[in-house]
Length: 52
Length: 182
Image (tube, rainbow over all chains, first blue to last red; front, side, top):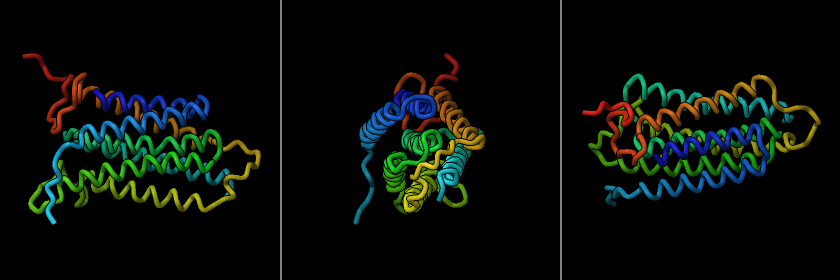
């Protein structure tokens, strides 16, 4: 569900960037980027099978 | 470099990103391989990469618009690198099919690295930031913007079908919303 929400958020950012104000588009972009990084950190729980 | 040329280059960049998303979609539909959560995050970063060029086409080129794309490209490269490392051990078959010898996440890492280099290169040309009073967005640029928005909206539908209203499985094998009730 979170990925659907992220894609929807990016679509909204694009539409605002094309039709809305520049400031709002940049603010929405920042929020979406932070949300995608938070989603990544939430999912990045698999152990990397690396040995050096 | 003039503002008009920069606008055309940004529109070409949008077409390149659209091509990446279209190829990912084609692999998903033709090979019946559903994207994993990390794969979806990389697609999202490719879509976010397009926000900078859209702003450049609409408002004219500005360094801050290129910075927006740089943030998305760096995040995307980090996500792709994580998935490459997950499958780097010898004998690991990787996730999904390989395309021309590389898996999707390897291509994604290369794509984000190329985007970072391209963004750094285009920022070298200061002439594009001088306002020459011309309308930056032509028909080609407008079409590229709408193609990108349409592809991202299609991903909303596809991801909703794949993941449903719950958490997306780590190794998705079927579209959650298309499963028939027993």
